[in-house]
Length: 119
Image (cartoon, rainbow, N blue to C red; front, side):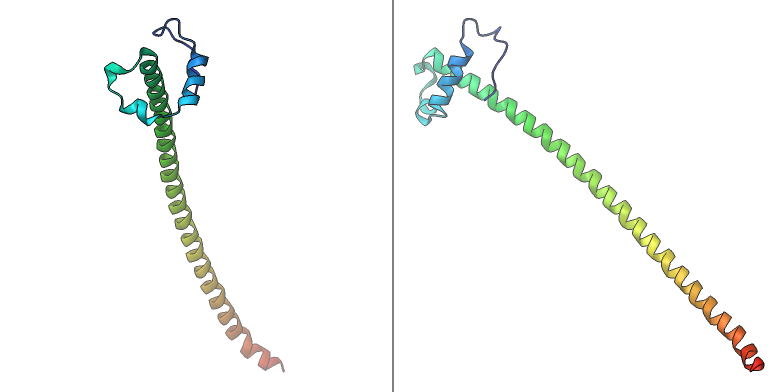
């Protein structure tokens, strides 16, 4: 649990003591089931502090999730771009191989009759 550094709205409250108390109590189901008027003011303060900490943590978790989702979208775009580049290179390779094969065939046909003439 994070330590609250500024307590302008909570005068004369020992935050460290409240944190120790929070650690001792944890999330006590009996405390949550009590009627709000029957709770002592310290328990209300404790519950409010716990809820604020939970909401703050939840907000940071949502920000992190949004960042990861954005990163995932970027990664997928990058993956698609790389796939397109690979496909283009493979197509170029096939075309070059076809040109080389054609050149080999034409050069062999060109030199073949001449070698026979020299024998």
